[in-house]
Image (cartoon, rainbow, N blue to C red; front, side, top):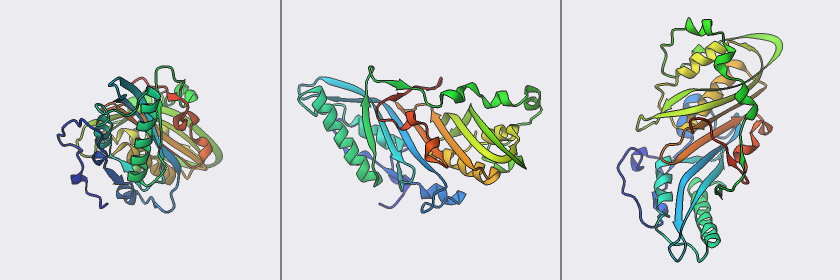
Length: 298
């Protein structure tokens, strides 16, 4: 399948489907953005996953009883493709008026089987799909990070002196000094804003970062850099990978983790995570047995 964003329904009007239809699904090659930041698909500088929470999934049993669930999708960052979000929304809507089993359990299993099969084929990778309801266990990703807000790590008077005027991604803003000491940084921030690559609609994210490096990082420069995404047009996954690669290039970390939990749009939130070491990936994000607790804006 040759990539052409004009072939997708992103940014276009589309009728709401009435019956299950996998043809709505559209994929985007990750390499289309990675090549600009010297990320080699064959030798990725990270491990990671894309985690999608879909809150408006519903379908019918054979006698027309509606079943509503939250769907969690997990697939690896090393996959060649990512699924385009509006196509996924329309695809999931196509289940709404169709019948999938004699009982609720039968319908759930049949729908999950279809979703897994369709997304596995589309993305050419293993996609984990699981349903949750109001009784499912909920875990908070990155619980310790919430105690450390990036803005609180920089004196207010220093922030007030900064003239924030760069609103296109500007890695040259990142500043640090190499030392002989190991520095550990852990923080989160709700400053991240970027825009959809096609519709230009704003995307709001909470960013979570862990860095181990010999660089003494000027954290005010990190704030300046993150603010520079404010008029940048990229998909969620691309933003996280760009930030990861810029931090890697600037700070030469021994360990690095960057994750974002984005505000939902169209009933879906997307939560990419990239890390230098697998053990840095928060287990709650990629768990198939618990829902993820939401951030304030989600």
